[in-house]
Every structure is written in structure tokens, then in C-alpha cells.
Image (cartoon, rainbow, N blue to C red):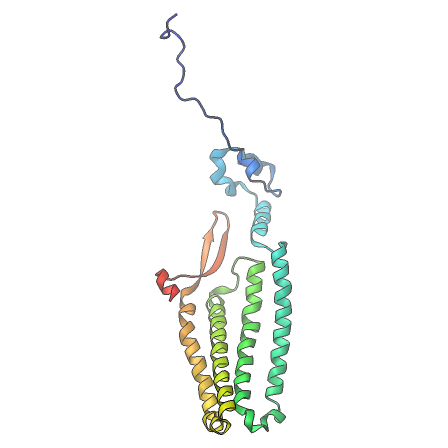
Amino acid sequence: MSTLDSPTVPLRQPLPSSHPPYSSLISFPALSTASSSALNDPTSFPLILSNISSNDLADLEKMLLWTLHEPSTIALTIMYCLSFILGFVGNLMALRVLTSRRSRRLAGVSATRNLLVNLAACDLAVVCVCMPITLGNQIYTTWVYGDLLCRAVPFTQAMSVSASVLTLTVISVNRYYSVRSPLRARSMFTRRRILVTIAVVWTVSSMMCAPIAVMNRRQEISFETFTILVCQEEWPRHRLKQG
């Protein structure tokens, strides 16, 4: 028999798959039987989310968004709570001491006292405004605090840190002149000049950090059946962000 009379052999043979089926790659214990059967069909894989029931979808969303069960989140929560307690109590005690009547009677340290009050106010702004929301966003990764706080929290944090750095710089200059020439330091760092300096510090910090409040915005990431809100910066060019 000639080879032409033999049955036609297909030129393209199906190659053995080197990858396991989708059901072995993706396993959600909360999925129902219908949802897990859809995973075995590769053609229906893009439509898997639409076949999940509402209870399975809630469990999936909880598994993806809640991170409190992770060891890193637990350690971060403990450190944030300790930092919040120590920072809040410590700065309140510092403000109470620095604004007491006995401290006001010391005219020689009035300049340093005002600068330290400003420094404690910067730390309280970070502790009270930024730390709770940052920790909450770490535990529940979607942004649920609105567009206003999406702009205000990063701006407050950056402005407070910048004001703290500038205040420490002014304190260093004040201490330098107080040690080198004490008589000259008293005439240079008067109470009025210190208050003007503090106002300049906050103004410069606000101007430096103003782009953060403009470029931060809340965005939606859609997954067909549910939407995740995130807060991130959007710069028209990457060079502007680096600047």
C-alpha cells in the first residue's frame, strides 16, 4: 500500500501541556462548587469573578484587602501603637512644661522655649493626623477616608516634617550664637523675631509641600465585580516628582 492511500495524519499534534490546570494554580477555599468548576475551564477564566457568589466575593475581598492576619502587619501595628502613645503623651507633657508660668519667668530661654513649642506642635500633627490613618490604610488596604484626607494627610505629614527640620536648624543657630556670643544672641533672637521666624518656617514648609496636596488624589481600580479605592500621587512627568 502506498503512502497516499494511508489515512491522513494531522500535521499539527496537540502538544502536552507543561502547566498544571488552573484549579491547581489558583485555590480559594471560600469558593463554591460552581466557581471551582469554572476554574477547570481555561476559556472561562476571564469570567471567573462574574461566576462567584456574593458570599464568596465578600470572602475574596476580605482576603485581598485585610492584612491584619499577616505577621508584618501585626508587628507594624504594635510599633505604631507604642509610637502613638509615647509621642502623644511625651509631646503633651513637653507643651505643658514649656507653657507653664515658671518657664515664662526665664527670659533667657524664651527664644528656645518658643522654638521647642513649635517643634512639639509639629510632632503632634504627625502623631495625631498621619499615624492613625497610615496604620488604618495598612490594615485595610483600600482607601476609605475620602478625597479630602487623601490630599490632606500626605501634605500634613510632609509639611510637619519639613517644619521640624527647619525648626531644628533655627534652634542650632540659636544655640551656636548663645554659646559664642551670649550678649549678641539676646539682641538677635528676641521674642518678636522668633515668632516671625516660626511663621516663615511654616510658610516655607507649606509652599514646598503644596504640590503634594495637588497631585495626590483618590483613584478607583475596578475588578468587574468590585472596586478598590487607592490614594496615590499623579504627576504629569516623572521628572517633576523627582524635583
